[in-house]
Length: 253
Ligand code: UDP
Image (cartoon, rainbow, N blue to C red; front, side, top):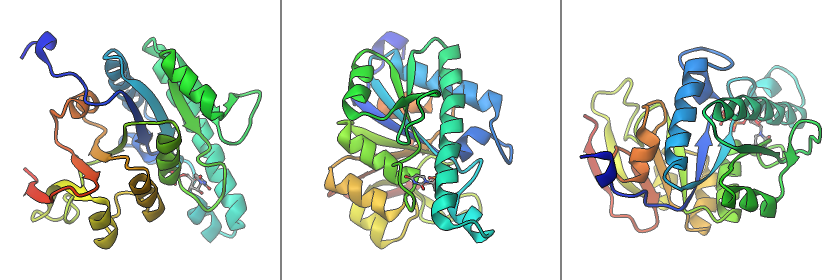
């Protein structure tokens, strides 16, 4: 199929949740330059189709609140440290997006005037309308939450048509496909099934929030170059989580 005959993206405004781990590539910490370049290329490809994009960035490649708390730091303090880690990641992603020619704005839920803009809902929408990629940092701005919940929250309040959750594998599986050859990928799931089966795709508060706002969640392989656009065209493997989805399972391979 030629480029011109590709189906158009199915969504007008999307939210992409990128975990901190996704930025590490095969490393154990920090940022992998090749991975950042690949992600930037994928975001640019979607932008070129006229799709408005908002990114919510995690911080797990630097610090997670629960892990820091286990080592003796007060939990709320540890969570603020985690939120600051997401700002570091947001700046790294901003830089890689700018290197591929995109206009971006980092908006932080914790005001940080010398580093980036504060998160203001109307401003975020305006940036997207002007073709800028909005990068939401510092999660919800509150301890005891995660950036998955922040992603569902921002998707709801920014009027996103879908929440794209990039993971290491191309969807939600019945078991860990890395270790269990019997694992099968779900083509579709309902929010209820994800919660009842404790499928660990996102935390329960994020799933519930997406459900209340009727925002579908699409789980896909973030490290497969080009998958982001293909998924938006309905043309690459993924799992769609929505209300009343008839559940089917398909072979992982
Ligand atoms: N965090 C928080 N409130 C939020 C979002 C994040 O306290 O609204 C903290 C929390 O400690 C978390 C850390 O920031 O462990 C990093 O975020 P997350 O674990 O969601 O990152 P990811 O797993 O997506 O890389």
